[in-house]
Image (cartoon, rainbow, N blue to C red):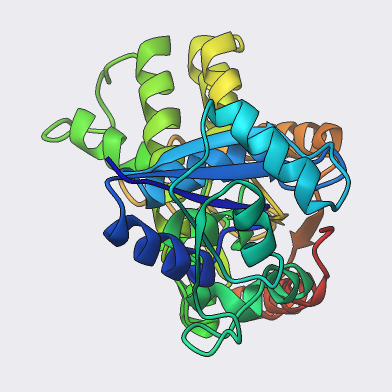
Length: 328
């Protein structure tokens, strides 16, 4: 059985790495990919390992600490000790590859050293991730896509703004799953009559599904993803209907990734569309969202006035966000 070996930081994994690993995997019976992580790197090694496992499910992905000097002998000795043997073939795209392989008594295969097949590098991705989304696999791409959430009280234009902003920025948006759930729940009932109650389990299911849909959409979005509410906001609706916070719902919301909140102010007439809770809670909901977002230290822009003005205020904020460099 032929054992192949690939080593790297994969910071982050890109399609150049995929090209290397795919070629290696086709030439051996078993391929081990060793990912070296240093605490100074901003993308956790565990996350990069999980990405590689998704991208290459037929490979063994190992995460090891990057504690050695930049010395082929040290790394060769470490690799043999770690694997319990020398690999039969080492695949790389780097000049150190042949020496590293020879020190383990392994054959070396150089793969696209001049980066002609897939002209990309981790350095270039880290410098400007949004410019290289087409060189990233969906799970990695989703990590860099900026997430903008429309949050706030009912009848403030959130859904319309999310859809129009997505159109303006040529990307995707995620509708509010809780509204879809509510419409199915009250289908055939009169909003003027007695309505069914809510349970914490329902809110947990809504928060989880909202987050799942958002994470799925981020894999295909173009630089920015717009979300009509998020799982974090579901916790406030739980508070509204059940009368208190719920630890499970809040735990789901705390996993949300948000780069910018857009919070429309309820300063124009309420419109009842047949499914909304009512105008009497708009001010309370608005205040709760303002207080809660402030405690999360996430950027927030308040949107005021007519819809077109809100759209322009939101677009300016998103343009600024897209120009903000990543901390990598």
